[in-house]
Amino acid sequence: MDSLTIVAPMTPAGVSAVAALRVSGSRVRDVAKLLFGERAAASLVARKASLGTARDPQTGKVIDSLLYLFFEGPNSYTGEDVLELYPHGNPLIVRELLQTIRGIEGVRLAEPGEFTRRAFLNGKMDLTQAESVADVIHSANRAELENAHRLLSGALSKKVATLAAQVKDISARLELDVDFAEEEADPDFAGWQEKFENIRRSIRTVLDSFHNKASLGRLPLAVLYGAPNAGKSSLVNALLGEDRVLVSNVPGTTRDFVEVRLFLDGGEIRLVDTAGIAERATDELDALSMKKSKEILEEADLKILVVDCLDERRETRDERKADFIVYSKSDLTGALDGGFGADMTLAENALRVSSKTGEGLDELKRSMNETLFKKVENSEDFWITSEREKACLEEALAGIDRALDLLRNNPAVELLAFEMQIVRRALQSITGEISSEDILQSIFAGFCIGK
Ligand SMILES: Nc1nc2c(ncn2[C@@H]2O[C@H](COP(=O)(O)OP(=O)(O)OP(=O)(O)O)[C@@H](O)[C@H]2O)c(=O)[nH]1
Ligand SMILES: [Mg+2]
Image (cartoon, rainbow, N blue to C red):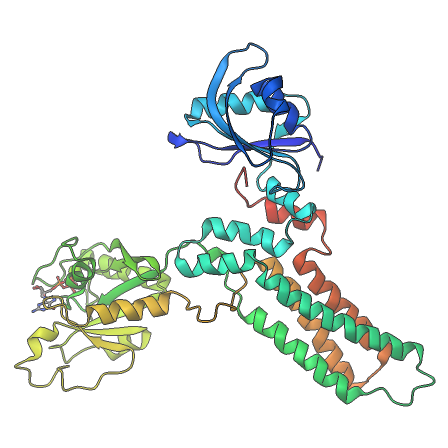
């Protein structure tokens, strides 16, 4: 990739109060000169906002009157000179500014993620941090966002650096053993084993925290299902606090599944009300609705079975699939003989609720929140989201495993030293100490333009 000066809008296309564009590279001062004139360019002060009139350098026509901000490299996001422009949020203005700037010699349009890529290449951040920039932008709930910020501030980098230092230390000593193999009696293989195992445990812990990036920004899905007339639609309305879906005492009221958005403490979720699933379909339409209910259940992150408290013939087959069971209409169990009244002990993943009185609704929301949103108790904790980081950790783990295997079966110092080198290289590639053009390409291609 070349080192031309790059420009891109930082805000999405569309009408807004203000838009933002960024220019980065060695020609930034020239860009300022051509847009705002010689005097303005000469008085550029780093990190101080200026108000100016941007003109087309060819025609002298006014493009916009706007605020701009200059950062002098290396003290900028990319490590290069950077100019940020804040024109009025009119797509026409943004386009004209963009055309004008990219028309300047030595300037071109930035590729997706190229600003962050330059930040990485200029040592402003390592690869784990660069990857977390995308996570910060795409997080859809509090927990994801907090995690992304932890990664951005270098939580993984620190952990990996500690591990790499330990491996380096081991390697150094192993190599020493190789050099003095004849003089030394027996290398301390038992001592090595413990060290290897400690490193293995640390790598495993980080690896186990992997949380697929594909799930980032995707709203968790909770599905309510159960027999016709169980009170599913009423429960949706009660949870939302408004009459959104149709309710009636006729079994089979809900036909198509209905999706609503529900806000829980941890963030927004998709809540789906389905058509009741009966033992036997009454007609073709009934069979179709039941089929749809079953299909959406397959996708659910949380399957909530709704059982009418008064219904003793609840299907145990369905319960096995359920992550959570809700016994509905608890307000009706006062005069109850049998069924799932207040005197009945429920499983840990079950609750009695009433859409009429509101009993159990807060508890239900709390349980949903706990299951659907990862809890982060310790502010030091983080989870990794990058397939690439996961692959590097797996490579490191495999190296450690081979080393442990050697120790057990055929301890040879040279071979151990060789495996440790592999482990170290795998760890170093996580933070990008070792990286290739292909890897960078695949990371930054997924970024937004202008980031
Ligand atoms: N007393 C009482 N009645 C309820 C409660 N929840 C639902 N009902 C009644 O039960 C009947 C069925 O409720 P719905 O919410 O339509 O049941 P559903 O599970 O969506 O039914 P289908 O869409 O047919 O599968 C209605 O007459 C509701 O008024 C509750 O908590 N208390
Ligand atoms: Mg319904």
